[in-house]
Length: 185
Image 1 (tube, rainbow, N blue to C red):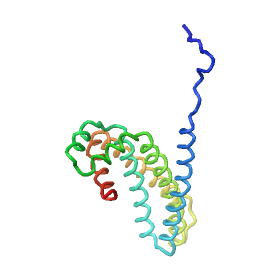
Image 2: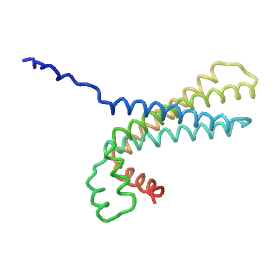
Image 3: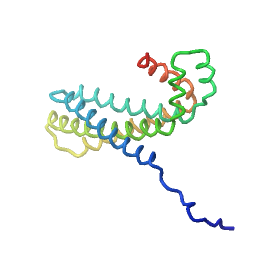
Image 4: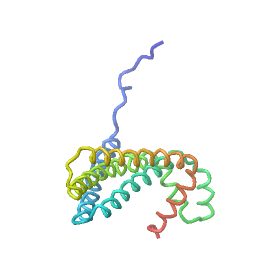
């Protein structure tokens, strides 16, 4: 049996949905510019070894934020209510993360995760060029190998991170709350 709609029952997008989309867009643009600028300045004149370390940093950052994004959606708020009642440092910040889990997850998984993926790809391209110049070889195999390695490390790391985040969500949110508490004093 099909439900009939009465006039005025259509769901309208609230202004807060549009505001959130604009906020995420602006955050993504600003964060992307900042991380890209940081990457470019660190890579300027750096050798292959330093470029690989920078690549590892961005892959690790993407995995770390993916873990946080998953943990806030999986964690239970009850232990944090108890901690907040006992004035445990970081508990209030953890509760704030959990109350805003959809936004926190969106920023961590989508904004930071995607930006780290893009910056990792750019860093990978720079590594390919530097390897080709160092080896005096213009082979597509170097590009394929670097791209495959970046993809494998990112996807494999995020897969392990998601499992960890699901099993240890309370600890992840707790330690994130403790870290954020350092800035709320």
